[in-house]
Amino acid sequence: MPLSTFYTLIGKPVIEKYGRFKGRVIGFELDSENNLKNIVFENGGVILSKNISSFEIHDGYLIYLPALIKEGTNLLNEYKDLELFIETLRKMYNMNLSRKLIRIYYDKTIGRFKSLSSRLSKYIKFLERRRRKIEDQIEWLKNITFYLHIGNENGYLDSTLYKYSYDLVSSEILKFTNELEDIERISLELTTINSKIESYLKDFQEVYEENVEEKAGYT
Image (cartoon, rainbow, N blue to C red; front, side, top):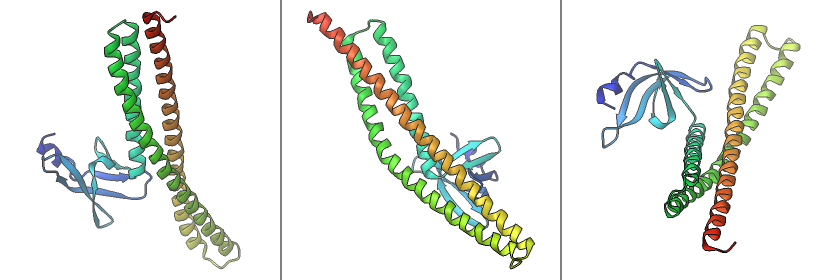
């Protein structure tokens, strides 16, 4: 990406995925090879710098994603790439290409799958920790709304202040709820595709070994 392209980002709105903040790009940082490294933006007068990997760049604006959500999205994309590669490998096998070549690709695929599975195991633990934290936050916020209701019902709190406070707390609950839904979706999609690929590889291994035994005259 040419340097001039980076300047087109300046001035564009930055929106946090769950609506927690809105800001505007005011600069950028490059790495030692002049690749885009960080996006610099302001949020309520506070200047922040975040790695480019945490952003989705759209026409006219940027979306900032929490690191854990972004990591899950990237991991899912890697699984989908591996799934596509396995589909290609199965087609190659049916074309009766060199079994030695097929075996080389299969072994590489196994290596990639084991690496992804290891990363997934660690990621799910972080995801579960975040899920519990969000659930605690939601319960805490609901407790706040409970006392707001008491104040409003008993005339301890001005109705205008009640509505203002209640709307803010409810909005925050919705943001956490949306993030929780994303966490549950990502967790399900990742564990599903991991099991699917594991099954693919197991089936492929069984067919491959049967074919080798037949060629060797063992059956």
